Length: 398
Image 1 (cartoon, rainbow, N blue to C red):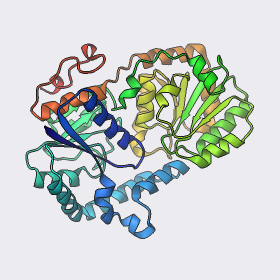
Image 2 (cartoon, rainbow, N blue to C red):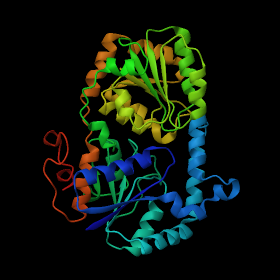
Image 3 (cartoon, rainbow, N blue to C red):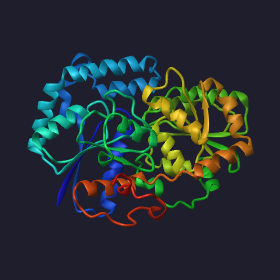
Image 4 (spheres, one colour):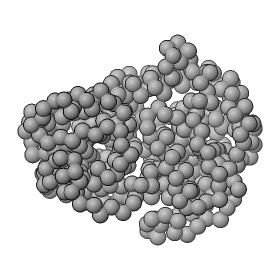
């Protein structure tokens, strides 16, 4: 039985989601592999400088920044983080080497940015010749030293043509770049769902036939959700909201206490985002790759913003939305009323829905085929939904 490590961290929810999604679909496909999820932060805690100074893990500080919208100047902070990583390169490599010696595997998959040089060097020192794969969980890289490194033997799995071109530009040949049809998502987003949106709205205490937006800002929510709700409530538009607050209990309590004129359903952390998306007509949220990809699979146009506060690695996502014409990009959620008014136009919404329906992201089912190839195993025909309609990701790089 082949052994596969999947390395993730909890800075934002998308990395853990990607790791769990891949592990889940490998099990569903009954691959003869032993798959182990490894939390990167736990391996490297003793080198977390910020934790030494504050007692708080760097991933927790990152989530606090997102939750409060403290992202202005994020590019500078990102580059400082990268300099710090390079400063601690050697001790981090030695620390990771210890982990691989104690727990070797046949293949290592990284779904995290920033540290791929350190991960590769440690892996190659202990397990030379065994493949190291980076799955990009953004729509594009934010070079240098973000997702893709100038390492000859780094295999890159990329969900957009932009990311594929970035990998090739840095020197990776076709044998090391694997394009997929989109971002990796949990397989439950693909489960056929014929539930009645009206019944779901009734379950949430909403009006059955009123246009509905689902408001989603990741697993930790964001205080901007309250501001969005206030603006739409004041505008008295014919719309209602499903507000997903994630683990932000303070935000959820604040939203529940307020008496709103518009129908509002407030939910905390849930693993049923796919279910509640079925009750919505469009999504309002941050331009995160996970939220956009989930909306595309659930056939929802998106209303997002992009400005100086947007994380630098997510700014291309807004460009992608505009290029594919699958939603509206605002300069600020201060313009949310105007944006929702556009979504309420039946012609505009129908155009977006048509373009969203043209997207066919099957990446989570394609990636195990790529890993099987790297493990030297035969690939399987028809191993994922819609496979007959998708180009073969393996053939694309032969």
